[in-house]
Length: 100
Image (cartoon, rainbow, N blue to C red; front, side, top):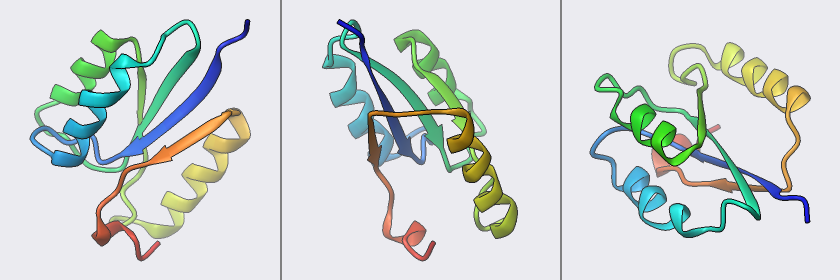
C-alpha cells in the first residue's frame, strides 16, 4: 500500500500552542501510511521546531511571511503547490493569519 501525503501548515514557533497541538497529535499517525510534510508561516528564532520536525522525520519548509511581503508569500505558495502533490492538507493557524 502506498502511503498518503499530508501537508501540515502551522506557525511552527517554539512555545506556540498551535505548534504544540501538532506535536502532540500527529506523531501518533502510522508513518507507513502517512508521509507528513510541514510548512511554517511563523519565524522560530530558536529553531526548536525545525529540530523537532527533523527528529520526527518530517520535512519543514518556511513560507515567506505574509506580513513581510504578501505578493512573495502568494507566489511562494503557488510555486510550492506546483512542485508538490498532497492527499490531505491540515491548516492550523491563528485568527491573525485569517486575513489572507
